[in-house]
Length: 95
Image (cartoon, rainbow, N blue to C red; front, top):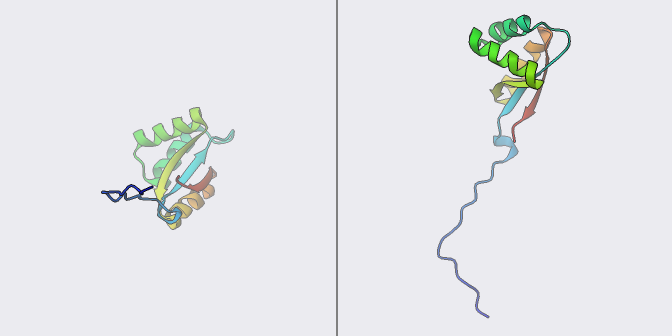
């Protein structure tokens, strides 16, 4: 039995773990006031009041929000800054 020939090469683009961005996730907690979380997002992460409020509401209603993404070192720094401010933040790789 003859094998069928392929006329076109199929290119598969596989994202490796090294290429995926990192995410900083802030989790809801029973301690911090919503106004304080908004303030931290503005002062620590540089968001304007509107975006900081949107992210705070996402944390409040959904239990978490991705507040920054990027290279591992940058996101690690964001997590440390948020911890210093008293927020519960973690990081994980996208994907």
